[in-house]
Image 1 (cartoon, rainbow, N blue to C red):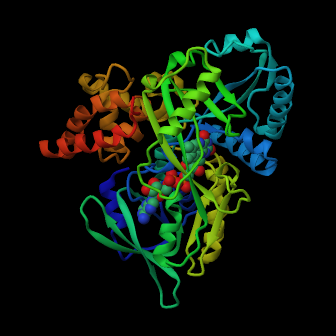
Image 2 (cartoon, rainbow, N blue to C red):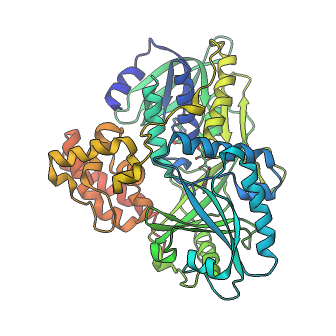
Image 3 (spheres, rainbow, N blue to C red):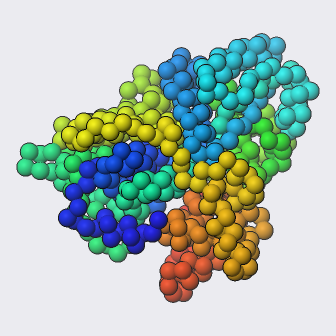
Length: 521
Ligand SMILES: Cc1cc2nc3c(=O)[nH]c(=O)nc-3n(C[C@H](O)[C@H](O)[C@H](O)COP(=O)(O)OP(=O)(O)OC[C@H]3O[C@@H](n4cnc5c(N)ncnc54)[C@H](O)[C@@H]3O)c2cc1C
């Protein structure tokens, strides 16, 4: 994946694309993989970096959604459980099985949640993970050494999937490229073009790096811009009624001592009636999430003080060693693009199903759903897009399509495990130049070679791309990421032939963003 080559292809205005996708998050990348695999000529344009939006800010679960079971949405849970199984099959280097314990503090909780979680397991059918079971107080304490022992009666174990969201996204972009798609980051769609019948037949876009503007023509345009769905629809029809409701969710990241074993905690009922997780992730503890209705959709959402307080308070109820603000290594927020078809005013009750909306001008918008169900969403969307654009009928083949990096024993690559089949190539960089084996910071497991790899092979363009989405430094430890920024800028400058001024601008821009990942103490 070379941005230079992608740019050359995208800027050729003579190309007639079959499908043009706006948005390089999970939804858009999924659509690009599916469309390109079917042989359709596909272009994807992302205004910032791939995964800059919600898709790098999830709870990192590949799951059916225990909460939706409670809400009685069986079909959504079954669909997601099936997709969970397919994703583990197609990206085993990034998706793994994780045990969860629901700790019980009264006699009825064990049997009550035990039955619910058994149903959850049964619904997954042949795509099942490990079996759920009731466990004793002693076993609960063994699996969760820092769980609050006061009044603990036992627990329920069940299994779900866990992943690294932005790494999967980068690998989906790679998969789409291997299937023949053209995908470009830092390419913002600024307008929707229409033919003389008023039907959308292309876009106007800008290369954010140079400011140059271009047009692209397509048989069908898919709007996969998540929280920005309605603003992109307004480019073609300023009167279009909204189809999504944005809702913010935040997470805090603590060190491993808060969850020292490799088992997650699931709290089925917080004081605001939600589910809360504490999850071991890349050697740290991830706690979240919240559900806060918002009216604006900024590109860089910041966790609210009350969200941080709520997560600390809820975690403190369930943990013996209680986290404080000073323990927070990173805090991040994302915006759910919820489909506006739910009944309740509370966003926690809005539909988690996806919606495909076709405007009268022919623009297809796909929004809602979950990371877990991105493949199925893409299949639905490409089916509809192909019909609308009269493209030759081709069946979807992504159920069994390996995702770039596919490797059955990626753990053997140690700290490079997330790269799967690409890990040996990164090792070779270090073999050729031992200096690239240097860690970027003593507190995180990232080496200089990863910066070089991401710049050469994964279309990373900025310090933020490296520290937020190619590695997960910013999400794991914001202070460490700030310390790493000057070295990353120097390595990128060497790769791209940039000067000292560029490095300084990069470090300043990154530090500003990273300050939003640090809570006020
Ligand atoms: C707090 C939280 C926790 C979650 N946890 C989970 C979980 O554990 N498991 C799970 O399965 N799901 C989870 N989800 C849901 C999941 O993350 C989302 O459903 C998914 O990431 C949405 O992806 P998307 O591609 O639709 O949106 P996004 O990832 O936001 O992508 C949209 C992209 O469009 C781009 N864009 C916007 N306008 C333009 C333009 N004009 N030109 C070009 N590009 C443009 C944006 O820059 C952005 O990158 C969670 C969501 C949140 C908010």
